[in-house]
Image (cartoon, rainbow, N blue to C red; front, top):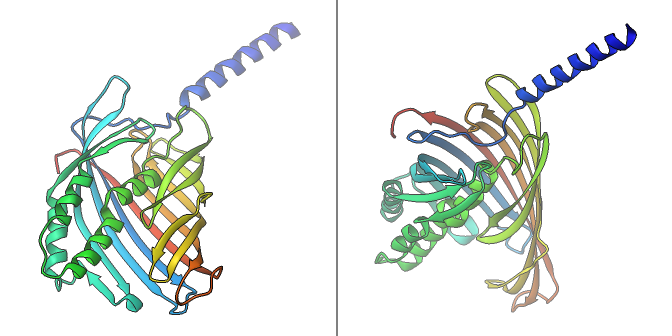
Length: 311
């Protein structure tokens, strides 16, 4: 009798375990063709340098991206059309004599370039985990902007650099890797790691993001994470200070709320802190070997939604 009861108990435990396994969420995107998926990213960034001029740079950008799912392929990759909407960007750098804002209406060139970006479409392919497989069309849009004639080429260069930093191919890839590629290659699991590329000042840096599935409900999943950025490669370049090399390190936190059915992010609060150490190699103003640190803090507020009708 005791053996019989033990057998029943074991069977019940196996059934319960099987039921729990069936309830495990699928950690991937489950998007539907024909629908539009929206991501709005509010970015506020401040940079402080310990250089002689103590540069202070502030950048604000609002980025709304509309992802329309066109089709899926045999590998279950998603083919999507993307449009920018409601863009707003401003940069203030007193030491560099830069004060521009697309929301002020004071700069016609900036307004026209932002209007152009909002009217165009580019395309991408992403995996079910959210990995960006291909991005095409966005680089061509910026090439078109760069080829436009301008009476003030210095102003054009400042505007193009600002727009590239906020909405260019590298910026788009960085935001995509931070806030859309959030799922593991294999599922289910509660802890996973993604190695991504993050572009800081257009320079590619490797970043390791570690995620943890912290909460499950019928409607949402809560995913929290920490990213570590530590560039093993130093960047050599010529700047206004002379010939320099720089290294980047830092961290980022994530707190995601995602819709369980589709996997699409509904909200994310994220904070990033970076340290850039610049070493003087050759300069007319500074002694060789001088190390100049600068600090960048960025806050991200991300909101997502799903549109049943075409945008």
